Length: 418
Image (cartoon, rainbow, N blue to C red; front, side, top):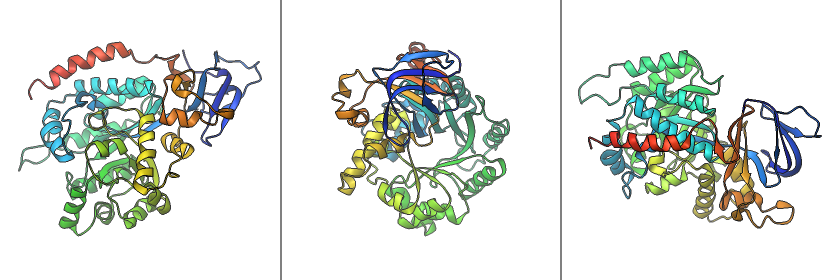
């Protein structure tokens, strides 16, 4: 069904303030909502007695094609996992395989109530159109160097950089919903020249930068040994940051570095499930980031290191690990947790209130949000710019069954030479 205003009756709605309101609501194409008097011109009226309306989830760090790598290298630490499992398989990656992996990821995210992804991976020209066609929003960040990387001693061809620049200059996709950004993997995989060039491109083209930073203690120690500075200090020293740079992980960050992030308006992305699975040891300190004025977002990382792209589960993990690490059960209460997971969302989703996991609801529904975060339920509807991407538990913009078969076949090709 095309875009338009929808009326949802006899329902409950939670906006960014975290307050539950009840009644009949109109969901508008511009992302706003108003109370319904019942006589407005709408394209659809939905019975909302067993629904909860909330803002959609936002996934600020993904590697979308890596559904192809889901459940690879179980039980390995990060660097072992990369060197023995991920990097060897990725040498078989093609634009076609990237499209298949992305399609599966997008289907998974829509089914889980997520409408935005900030991605970092190879072949952004294959990824961005899939995200746009699905109806989702995204910032698709592509690399500035060749893939697979050149052998030792060989110079980079510059082809990836030229292709990325052309993609950025061609403008956003999906009526402006999907932008192209610039990915710089990490300080231990990118030379200073590459980092500076990416930053220069970001300024010249108005494109967003993204990078993994301070994910492991080893990364931090090696950077300090090589430069005399910690990763974020080093990036600042070479004038890397541009407004809104996305810094994934930030698990081993000093307070000085937090102030640097805040001064540049950077987004520090908490990825608790991936960090725990890969035994990174350090966890982003949410309270310290807040004290420093850093803008914190939430992300799953790829399906390879997380096994899933479920942002509701990621929100639960973030709340749990912050309480645990700081010995403080008051950190990231349900409202704060939901605000972190849905920050800046312009879109709406509905959840199944009839699920047993959503009971008991408590007096005036005061347990509903906690139940949603910590217990879970099914996503029923997803609306972006007034268009339904999912209705009554079925995704409309992607055939999930077809995608499931497609990725099984693609996986056979992907792993054929390893």
